[in-house]
Amino acid sequence: MEIAKKICMLRNQMNLSQADLADRLQVSRQTVSKWETDVSHPDITKLIALSDLFNVSIDYLVREDETVQQSANLDRLVLRFLGSAQDMEKISSELVDIMRDGIIDADERTRMLTIVDKLNAVSHMIEVIKKALNGENND
Image (cartoon, rainbow, N blue to C red):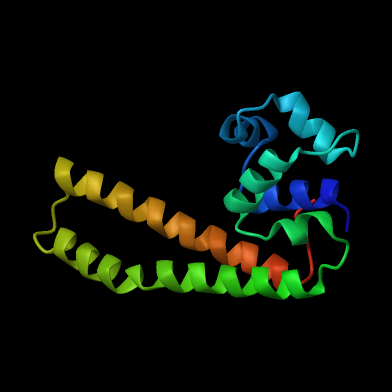
């Protein structure tokens, strides 16, 4: 896979728009579009920034061989998932605490919104892992 497709795939895996990626790298959205359509390529400083942001090696970004990196990416995804899954016990305990008196006040409502955000993140991570296992690249 060429660098253009890798940037697009990695950006999509992180649920970022071209504008979001452009903001993080301090470039224009058009620059990201040119990278993803293979019109131009990132310079070395942007390659380093992409590597750091996507948690992949520069070697992965610029080389064609992706088999090893796909496995490494799946490993990273599973580790990230395990980190968020550890929160599940805390979430369960917090929900029991919220429901203890049977009334959800404003503070508990705020706590529940935070819990929902955490659960959405876990759900998203599960979808990303499923796609990675099926060899999909979110194009």
